[in-house]
Image 1 (spheres, one colour):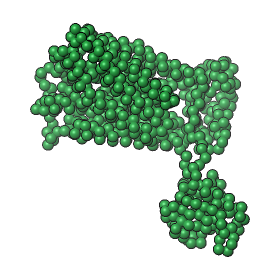
Image 2: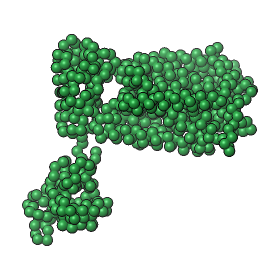
Image 3: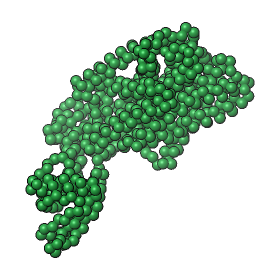
Image 4: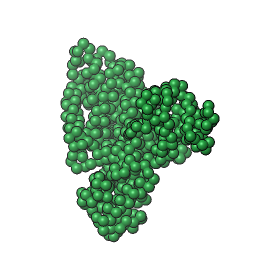
Length: 638
């Protein structure tokens, strides 16, 4: 809560007061040198310096000083001369009671302001239950119906182990959240989705390494030991970079973003433990008989899949640069020419209402009808899921902090809808029929908190990028790797924003709100995880094959990690795609952002991050030859 503004030059209008109450160290009633009741006041050093300048200006111009608490002027004394040390006396024709009251007002000014609701969301039982059911069912269908089955079909008994470790991971996360009495919001669920993806990815990394060892003739026990050992570096780097992002989001984030950060931090620890330790215990137990055991990591489907891949990815990097540049340019052009993205009340401030009817209502007609009720300000009215559900967003009276303002706006909305449709408002959304409508949910965000959310989101992302750059720079000993990772993340962000702008132009207007920010943070975590895995294999190749051209080592690393990349992307993409199709209107924008982000995050690791490192690493301006090694590349996942 902000500190109350106590001091303002009377002639100053609009803007902030020169001094506020927190600079006052004490104020009390006493008597002046003539024996009259007076008020004595002292300030800290910061306040004293500003007070000296303020009183000097007031004395030279004949301006009075206003003492204001809660927008009420309690006193407006004149100033005879500059007061240099912050110790002041306010005297006049006070009674003892008046002087004591003014002293108390000055003391009160040093306390926090009264609590005021700056953000509020109300979800009706039907809409809340519907969103919950759609989200849970979609994730269960994607996770259980596709991902778990796919892991078994692809990794055989290894897939069973991965699935068991994944269930342990979800159990641990929900258990910790339950112990903390944490409320599971949509951003929190996004954190769980990301950690589940990372848990699957960790097992994929390990299993691919084991398959590599088995492919070159290793024994099962030795292959398992070596596979886990070689996968540790990638898993640790991927988890640490994401954990650093979560810490920064927790420190700088607001509201739901903090919830996302907490869930992500818990999930990273749990997924690391389940993927590295629990799965290893089970795998080693199942392979205790050595080569006589029935433990295996591939099937007819996956055996030798992409094992001889030898594509010149970096030789085509200019095509990647061109495609990304064109796509982002189109998106930015649309944003500049059409008024930008479809920002929600989280970033603009305002009130939003989801109104449910029994029959379809034309959104444009209702928008025109509500303009008069909202003081000639045109609201935003659009369908929300079905055409019998509309979302009405308005900035009407958003700057008015008076108690009861929300009720006035809601009453205006109800009156406007009743006049336009002839229907009657009803509180119970389960009883909506041909004669009634209801407000299923509402949300209010003050303009001040909207700016705070926007600024906190920007700061969080910038600090996260800086932390990722520093960590990768320290781990890989080359600034080019850190810069390449950051460029890839910025690229992913711009592509997702451009996709939202292009979708809006095509008639699919997805709202940019705090849930969108949660989706963007999930994309950043996913993308950096993918990039770090590729970089880790590149580092290994450069160490083992330092005599080869850099671009050859890069190509071999990308080819070797392609199997892991496609498996991880496929499993995560399936869950998000089902969420997008069946998740309902509440989850549409969130799942669309994830859908685009997962695809572009995978793409940028290969065609943006690695190429940027190559292009920045050329010595004396002489580019390395874009020629892949003629020998076949053994598919091995870092």
